[in-house]
Structures are given as C-alpha cells and as structure tokens.
Length: 193
Image (cartoon, rainbow, N blue to C red):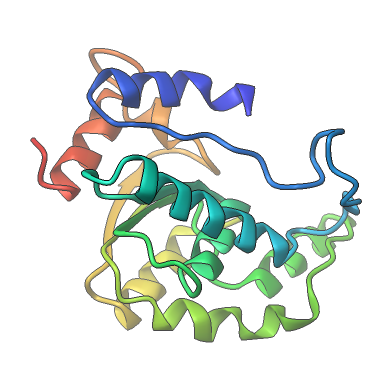
C-alpha cells in the first residue's frame, strides 16, 4: 500500500479519517495463496466488508465510504452487496471485468477471473449509493467511454474526467498541492466544501 501513502496523507490533512488495508494473500502473514494472474478474488469483498464494519464501529460519528482504484472498484462494488458504504469514490472504475480480461488478452497477458465474474454488471447496476468516478480520457484499461455508458444506466453517478490515463487522476488534477483539484472534487461530491 506504500504507493498510496501520499494520497492518504493528503486526505487525512484535509480532515478525513483514512483506513488503509491490503487484501488477504498479499503479505506473508496469511496462508491464503493468490495466483498473480487472477484479477481479483471474491474473498477480497469479504475483507473490505469487514473493514467497513470495523470503521463504522470505530468512527461511529463519521460517514464511511470507499475510495477504490481499478481492481479495487470491483471489490467495492461486490462489498457494497454485503455492507453498503455511505458512498463510493472510484478511479479507473471497472464496468465489466470480462472486458478487462479481453483488453489484457490482446496484449498477450493472461488474466483470470472468478467463475461468477459474468454477474458483476448486474451487481454494479444494483448499487444505489452516491458514487463519484474519476475517469481518464486517455485510459485504455477502464475507458472514459465505458464510464459514460455506465452513467447512462445510473444517471446519479457523478463523473469527473481528466486529461490522463489509467489511475493518473490524482496528479493530473493538481494545482496548489498534489491532488488539490481532485480533493476539491471529493469535497464537493460529499458537500464538505
């Protein structure tokens, strides 16, 4: 998680309580073995659900949301079926994991998916919570076009586009400090400005 410390620090400096965690199998303290070719495991949604429940209890006076990136947006979507967060903020939002698998197949990379990955779009359509999506106009993995299609199905989604590629929004939307415009968009979305 070290590559997200700058973002987490900046959010904490503007008043957010930030809880970072990693999914099972990424460290050495867990016997859960992961295949590096697997895009995600459904167990990761169980992990995120447990973190949401912990955060709600520990910080009972706060709204509890998820800020997820790329594969993490799949997990946020699946976890919302178990423990609904108050909001989701996503960048590089996956609208269909099967399209991600096809994207990497064109590049001669093998990406594996859980057996129920074909149900993801239906699960995504069921989410009725406030959602903010940062979408790069040059993102080839989770394309701006796919996010715009999702917005047609779910008009309540707020989309912030930026001139950049996959997961480049935080730095593309910077002025006074890294992510300053990005953070302003989050504050407006949550009506905290």
